[in-house]
Length: 419
Image (cartoon, rainbow, N blue to C red; front, top):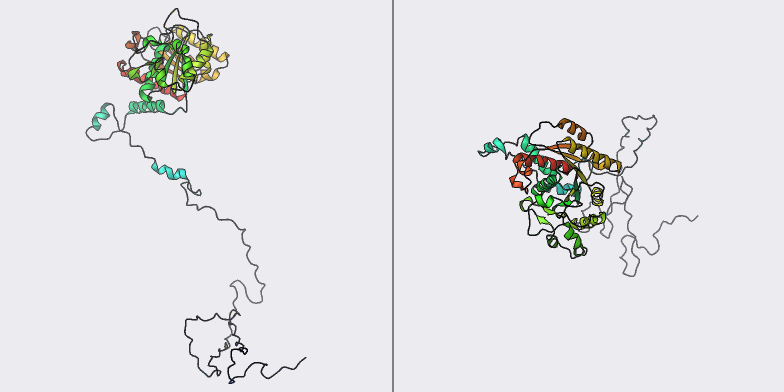
């Protein structure tokens, strides 16, 4: 081992010697002391901050010698409150597994769910105003500045109108049936179409699908033409392309003016041509379904006819009509037997039964009729006697009594519930 050298290293000048020129080696920098608490050298001072004057003599170069850290007083040992010297050190507490942060529970109306665009859009929904009576004595009192709510009768009317006006989600067909003549099928078709047209708007068609001669065109309001379904069937080719328009259809249907619906009449000649087939019914329905949202189909008296059976296959809601007589009710009951035996149980269970009342209730067994059809169909409703209907003349909605209009609005609401 070489003995340590005590003199200056070669090439280095001692203190007080002249400073070396630019071609001589630079003197090494004095090592900086370590910080007492971290063991790391202190940070360099800010070059823009002037040095603090130091006391005492330094080297000849004028540099200030760093002051070595002096001795620090001994620090007392620190122990956790639950541990004393000499005791076993406590084990560190087990940390729960890492769980990613979930959504803020304060988000969203349900809590824990962030808001969606649908939540943002709901703010545009306007809260409906409190209902105010517009009928009867309450409406008269409200004219002086009060705001009385509607009574029970007016509330029922409003609920029925809302049911009639609701969106059905597509084309719907209502078929009115009873093989017995004089059972009120044509009247029911007209009054249902009038009620839906008045309370809902247009796009309503009443179609007489009688296999021979029908009476729907006779009880409806007349138009500028007298064409029937057979004329439309003959000219069906012009609607089988993209050029068929609703304006062209007006040559074959009869507008009902204030009724807000149209009528497609059946052949009104007793010596007409052959009976309509199932294919003919399907072709006509395909055309009218382009221009109407709701179709009411009147049927004939022959349940074995092809067009009668085709109407059943396309039905969304069945309406069974009858007068409050045993023969009319028994014919309707046997027809329901036929429908059930042919696999149409759903139509029967969801059907609406309408019983037309005579001018007097004497000698009629109304409770027996109601009990039988209430056990087989969804609803049984009574249609009050109306003299205008009993005359056989064309029916105008404005000429009906308020009791008749309210009763058929309730029947229409029951029909709409099944659509």
